[in-house]
Length: 387
Ligand code: SF4
Image (cartoon, rainbow, N blue to C red):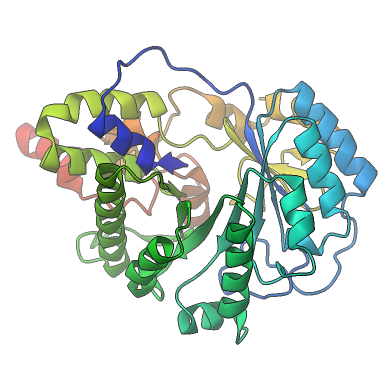
């Protein structure tokens, strides 16, 4: 997760570097239920509107929460499927708040209505993130449900009316990139608090034709727009959060933005970005799925580290006898290909390992979804110097 607004704040008001403070435990994204009332095109949990067997009981969830608390996990993001379809969601959320977790709810928003908004408000969620894939038609198409956009917007407005911090979660794809300006305008018009752009877990085509890759270009344009929008809010003194996920090259790309607009701050911002350190799957981000399986993050659903019904999360998470876990926890990580040669590896950390694994079979190969050009990461320059 890359917090653009935090770095824009740093550009506006630079602060001393200080020592890096590691979070006490990982942020846990918890897919409590796989059932969902929608069947979205890009859903990583491949949900459906039916009950899935073997999901954790309320008592199981509470036992896991106790362990997470002892392990000093600071944040629980309650997700799904659609978490509001879980009959005990309010029981779980209230208990999590009482235990002093920062509690977020990730919802598709369509089930937030007059019948439950009082109960949602009563929990005191620290944040409600509603996923939108575009404006109206685009969203309904992605969600495969006519009226989904209106229902989600109704949910968002209800949250807003109750003073709940609410924002948009947007997964960028080739088919909805054109709606990004509209969504940012929506954020402005509806006075929403946060915009989260998730890069699709795009496999790409490796290192070939990087410059001509339409999706890489679309990604760069999207990031340019996010940076400029975030900087405008920063200058206007408006508190809005901009965050991205699933592509840690975003940190390097922000450095280029700083180089272009505030060259005098490049060195300072670079040091701050290195302190951030890029990808933290398996370190500061964890995922528990609906069956209790633990994954290094939400994109690793086909790789299990263990199950919380068999072993406490705290044991699973610290067990580096698993080779993936050992590799993810290594610092620096040992990554090959262009990531291994990249001049900005210390910022990005080699990006998303699961993508490398899916494309090449080697989890320590380069990330195929890096949208930066060879010259930008120092590869071509080095080659030219050597010849
Ligand atoms: S080459 Fe690899 S390490 Fe460098 S920015 Fe791209 S993804 Fe990150």
